[in-house]
Length: 261
Image (cartoon, rainbow, N blue to C red; front, side):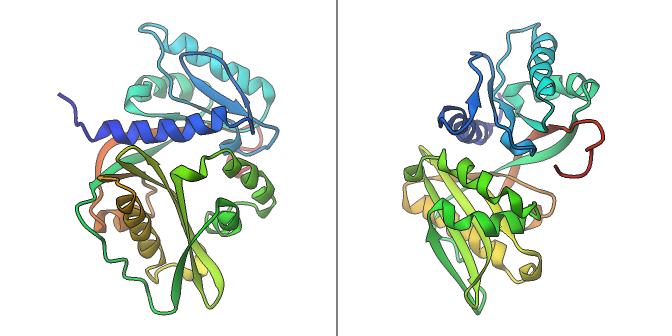
């Protein structure tokens, strides 16, 4: 019998992807066995594939069909694969098609009580609409600032009633952020980022704890996230445990590999 904690990790990510597919802000595919969306923005996050549920024996053929349609557009794209979404089976197929792969731990923790946010001296936290966190999020992830307008469109497709966005500021300057997306009793954490000059001061810890507390206040009994290597030790200190491994596959047009665009 599998670990029951994997299911909320997958379902919350699926809800995030579904919101993008159905938002009307992107072109979207209609295949019943996989979700896909795309735009004219030359950045992987804005052209995506996920929640594949291919029939037995068709994983390779369907994956090749889906990837071919994206490669034809000539823009960077990514594929989110969870254990239920053929993550292991897709490794050799998508690798053969030129897609790089990043292993991303899916993590889970119970929300048994309020968490001490340990907000550092001089740091203030506030809840904001998604549009107000875009610039600090882009800066925190060291992405090109010309993506700010595209991220405004990206966040516009998410249901604000299901979300809490927290921004951290020092002396009036925004330096960190994060998002909580709630589905049922699950508080999914995303977009946790701190600008380079503010790292190592406990900002990320405070933001993450605040999002967990926000989820608990709304009735969530547990929290999930997909951890970066840099953030993993922080999340472990907050009680998160790895329960599965997700895979992020990325395709870049020839000659653009490694430039982030």
